[in-house]
Length: 304
Image (tube, rainbow, N blue to C red):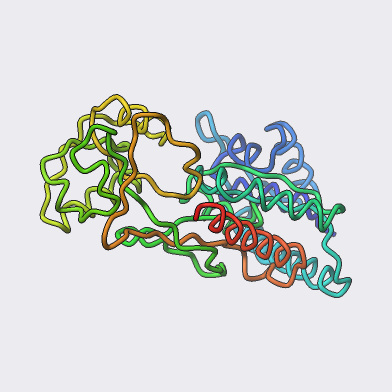
């Protein structure tokens, strides 16, 4: 009988393209992956990997077995989810990831709720960029992801994933305290024509949304400072170097010298929880989504 852990090792090499990458994904050593595949070769009586320069190449036999392994692992996950659902208890290991502001603004409160309500649940949390999270949920590396969905960059989900809306997060514009509009409270984005801007690196979602927002108002962005962390952007704003578009989620206390203006109409992003559809019956998944929603609801009240 084929060993499940050995099939998992072969499947990981097939997905990630190398023994090292597979080891990193499964959080084991490369030698452990090589040993599992060597044992699988003895079990099947087939050569599964061949040397290819400094790396390895899967043989046709390995490709066939990896395809079967993918289906077997999916069936195992369904079986585990059904068994947990039958027991009705929130137990086992749950791996959760969120993008940086979501990790800061949602996860601490959600984890506190889960630990209080379900002390037997074993939790592991990561901070991840959104695209990486979606890949890792789809591959089964993490169980639940918290991802944003901007108007100009909708988050495409592969088949086999489900999602639930957690909240609509509003972005405001941060301006230096000495800005002529600092006391306005609410402005149209067109009133900021001619201002300098502080933004994240081109190609990142937040940068692209700022450019989209300004150009939608027929304003050409003049970006003078590039920083990927919002606290760094706010430090530049406080020093008078320009404006920045800052989401409310996970914002934290503002530094002195910064005024925040609401934009009319308010730019929003949707925040989702994402999980594999095959695991939807796991009580741990349902409990985690409920805790995330509770954290968002309480957080929104705290921000009012």
